[in-house]
Length: 125
Image 1 (cartoon, rainbow, N blue to C red):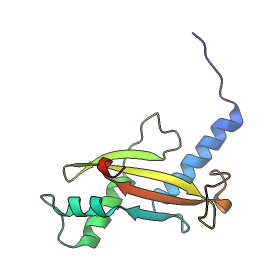
Image 2: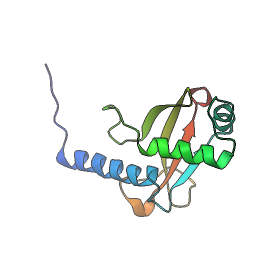
Image 3: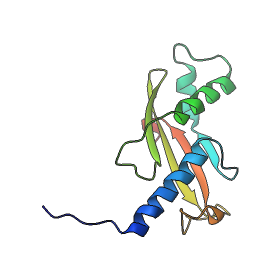
Image 4: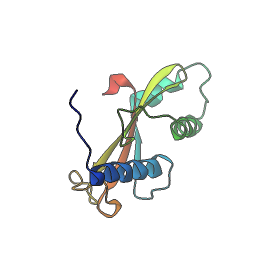
C-alpha cells in the first residue's frame, strides 16, 4: 500500500481554515455572510412543525447548523448535511476576496477572505 505524508504546513493550513469556517458558522466572524436559498426557506416553511414566523425558522435552521457534525471528507469543515423538519439541508462555505469580486487567494488568511455560507436544499445545487 502506498501512503503519502501530508506536510506539516498543509495540515496546519487545513486546521486554520477549519477554525475560521467554524467561527463563521457560529456567527463569530463579522465579515462572513450567510445566504439561505429562497426555495429552501419556502419548502421548510411548508413543513409540519415549522414556525409561522420566517425569522424564527431561520433562527432554528442556523442553530441546527451550529451543532452539526462534519464528516472526515470535509477537513476544512466547509460542507455539512443535516435533517431539518424532514428535509435534507446542506451548508456550504465558499471563500471570496475582501471585496467579494473573486475567489480568495488564501482562505487560511482571515484578513483577505470573506466567507459566504450558503444554506440550501440538494435540489438547489
